[in-house]
Length: 366
Image (cartoon, rainbow, N blue to C red):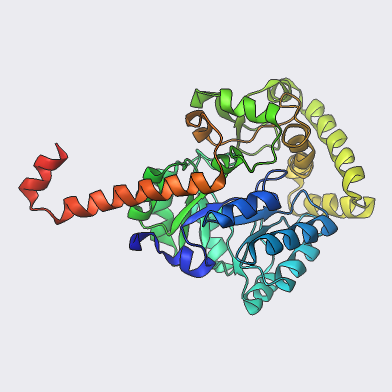
């Protein structure tokens, strides 16, 4: 399996080039532990955790795996973003991931501490910006991916970004099998990242009622993009809440957003001052994006309804289109093993065919 040894495995210290992405209320310590034991690389989602909870989860992973080869995901608009930065450095974690990235000074702090910066992007311009800001690796997510996603399919976005940047690229969006891993490696990626496939695993903390909704989806068209959550492209399983949100007026959406934001403030202990500072900053930088920012900031509450409370019709159900092709839950170890074995077989077959004389290879392929 020498072709499965890539820059991803070398830099992140995992056995296989398979990454478990961070998903709020889903990518907890147990999921990261399962991924790590299976030979992949997992990211702990800190966007839905306070500082004490994040520290506890980090220590739980280290104690269970004896390793610090996992990552921490956070957003800079979190009130405890600075704590997340400090903890990633303090514990010597292998990597951090993020969307809207930290400033250059924070990136330099990570570099000085040996913590790899691996932002996720959905467009070439964002990839170039991420590299300019000091990204060590980049995860590109094609439009097939779940949650916030771009409009360009992975099959188009991946080669574009590979041609545009000079850092290792991880492919995400539409991957759940060994065939997908083999195709990504053949294209030039250093590995794949998956969210939905790990969400639909035995280690996932997602309630049974919500997982049942995911398993029931068999038509990829039911996993569609909506702009109603925060004005940006958001791929999720269609449900009653999304239909209601899409039918609501602009004022109605804002009221829903404010109610959810206040609930999140009370739950996390976020100070009113921090909330006000965030809103004022948005008004200064992007005044037209105020309602979008409010919706984005209260996403944890919308996720909590489905991903923690087990009420799939009262929250949002972020999902990649691959959910329609998954009909059973498996352990992280089984998921990774089956992906690796299938990728190894596909790459070995490709190598054997390429080594044959042209005429013989054509007859074998037929």
